Length: 309
Image (tube, rainbow, N blue to C red):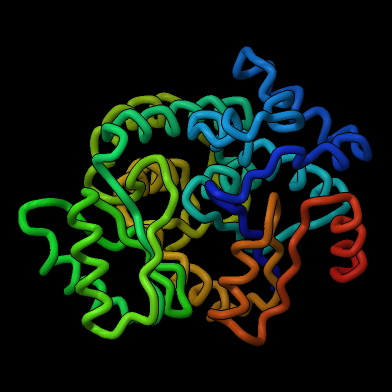
């Protein structure tokens, strides 16, 4: 069985997609659709930069969605039919485009606003995120509870293999990191992020995005989509949209998602889009899994050969 997985924010790079667009009319059409849907040349920002423009959250999110959908369009044309799809945070939108739940043009507008609302939810400098390495989830949760002191700090990404990202108010994240070290964490690494994603500080962003998500036309997914919020499949439009609303301010349960897929017989994971972050995490969670990363025309050909498409 095969699962396609789609990356989230942080996997972007200036120039991504250029070789693919040169090689594929399907990929070029996706980038053109993004420009038309947003009313500005997002493709120019992706292809030419500057990096500071691409890393603005309201640009990063539609850029990664566009790149991932472009790669998907090429793989689908070549005959890839996965049994399941999933995505990390923003990548859940890419998964729903692949599954047919959301039209690409609607999704790219949604994620631009999602990025903007998440950025505007917390004044710059008020929030922070940090990666905690080598500590169990229960210990990280306890450390966050001890460190909160009336502020917000909680697990944001449960990535697996001893990597848990925490998010919240800056002071609380620092205190929680110190507490995690005291509980035996191997390392605590502050992350360079523009906002504290997937924690209660994102409730204002969730509330702004919810009516837009509930208004957008949504179809029954053609492929089950494993949701971030509970690592359970979404097979209806209603439950899919509800999961997208909830995930803004709740943790990404990536390790549980990979484990759920492996337990259902998935042996091959195909990372569709820029970078190979998810591939690395999957290999640590399910060591025997076959993992393919697809971003360039060469990657497409390698995947087609490996999957006998």
